[in-house]
Image 1 (cartoon, helix red, strand yellow):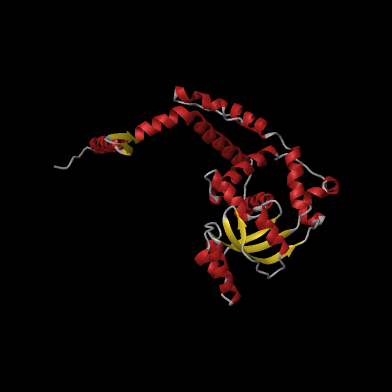
Image 2 (image 1 turned 30 degrees about the vertical axis):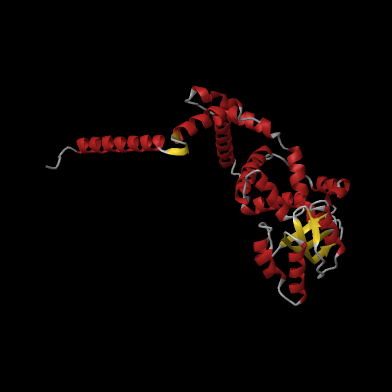
Length: 301
């Protein structure tokens, strides 16, 4: 018989829903994330340990991100993909190449997408810290004249390489290249460098002090379009082809104007620690777990 009482129907649905949710939680708690001989390590155990060791720090990060997000929305601060790309390129230039930067990220277990999100959060906070900054054009030109050495672009070389384990293999590949086979295709097929092989061995532009010393010496000694003999490094044997070179140069004021604006803006803005303190103190933050209450004091770094 169908019930004519709508309220009763709703209560039945809610009760059934709670039973199902409770059963799912119990299942997840009992399910093993790992097993040692005949003993399970459950998801609940892992969660509790993570909570004890890093719970406050992790919660502080989430609180900080939310405070910044709300403030950025309040002040109409928007970070575009172009802003993120410009910041990312600036950091890549400091490493000398995209591959060098990606390798640095891997050491910290991060992908380029992860890093892009960190840049977005950082730029939002920076936008809040600098929202009231005003800069005169004369300040920009003075900064450029006094900091030209910062903007000198050192000599760079653009190269591809094929990395193999032994010299005989390297010599065999060199013969194939001399017969006219495509360098990029051989790199995809033979190179042991997982970071560049799928890009045909392309390393992009890089400056001195970035690569292995013997690799760097060989690359900078080659002419554009030249392929050198096998070079030994700590990683194995490289066959290097130079595709382009850039001499040392000083960019014009107009070329670096945007960067100068960013530098002066950051100098004149509030310290981010002050901004975070102000955001935290003006917000209503309630932490329901007593063991995690310390998170509120870790919001400011």
